[in-house]
Image (cartoon, rainbow, N blue to C red; front, side, top):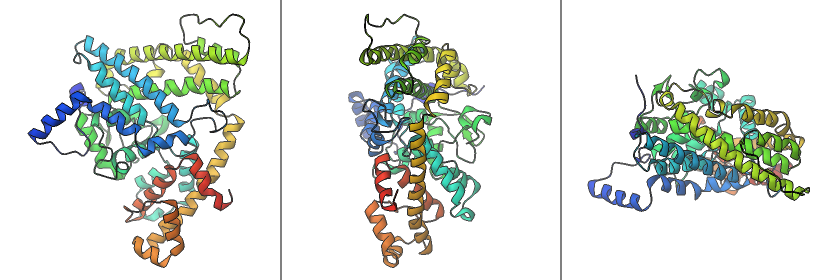
Amino acid sequence: MEHMEWQGLLTKARHEQREPAPDEAETRAARDRRRPAFLADLDRVIFSQPFRRLANKTQVHPLYENDHLHHRMIHSLETSSVGRSLGFEVGQALAAKSILLDGAGHDLSYILQAACAAHDIGNPPFGHAGEDAISEWFEMRKPFGADLSEGQRREFEHFEGNAQGFRILTRLEMSRREGGMRLTHAVLGAFTKYPCLARDGALGKAAPYIGRKKFGAFEAEAAHLEEMARSTGLIPQDGGWVRHPLAFLVEAADNICYNILDLEDAFTSGVLPFGEVETLLRGLIEKDVQREEGAADARYDAEHVGKLRADAVGALIRASVAAFLDHHDEILAGRFSTELTDVFALKEAFAAISEVANDRIFPSSRKIELEVAGRDLIFALLDRFHAVIEGLADHGWDAAAMAEKKPYLRKLVTSAGMDLRDVCDPYSGLHALTDFVSGMTDRYAVKMARPLGL
């Protein structure tokens, strides 16, 4: 029976990097002894501009309302911390079973930390509402509809931050050199929850395999996806591949952080009362966490919620590790097709928190106000800058000719810093448009929309 091998899954081969000569290989090996390859990947992600922009992108609650609420960068850093713990515990456990070599916990911890840090790097402004707004705009406007294949149209009408993240990591960042950030294939594999293209994925809950619920790469990056999959030894499936096993741990780290930290944010912002949050968190913790005697003000309530949150995260890490180890063989065979948090020992208590989030946190009035305003902003920005792509089309995709004949569009591109270097047809033009708009922070999107009266 076909199954994946850890030796390939943990490859240190870098994306789009040629095989080194013998003397180069020796130099690289010495460098890896000083700073492991997977740790270098983490540094490349953390020091990148797309990661920096996450500090001004919405997580769940509107930005600037409270300094203690999570934004997208803090969420990514906390997810990377949880991912590091998951990777270390799983690696050490597999080494103890002689499945991996001694010390594997360190490699897995670095891989998970890097992949988790990058997991939201492709998200547009205004959180998941931004993804929905971009999708809705393309579905309504249908630009260049006749010039796109069905799969290409699907990329835009079901715009996917995961695929945009893969595009950033493999193409757009690091001065557009071949391979983008040139991360290791092990980290790219762990990052890619949906190893398929739009024509093969985005099937939602009806997907026969969890890796087909969405798509993880655009057609423009199909070769990059294939290179990673072949290098790591992923099992081919229905035009794509099954997940890299560590992608299940990235998903678990994300689930843990957004579920638990969104709950804490809901308390901090006044969406949920102390007693309800305390009860929900206690449902995840075996030991009894005592509140300070006599404490009855908001500061002590916040400190107690913080203690409960820390213990809850620890309990969820242990449960996720146990679930991964229990299903290890199925995962490597590509037969495991659910989230670890749906099968681990704390699934009922964890699901109760998700239910409260769906019923009470996500529909909060302040969040809905943000989504409505964000949708209007993104529509206006796409309308405005799509005029640039139409102008290029009218001038045979010649940017110099457009700049000469359409001075307003030239000024618009220059003032906004829109990158048109790779635009040569409708498909690449629309990707340049979504690269530009999805890369904006919430703050920059508001700034760019002000001249439009929004």
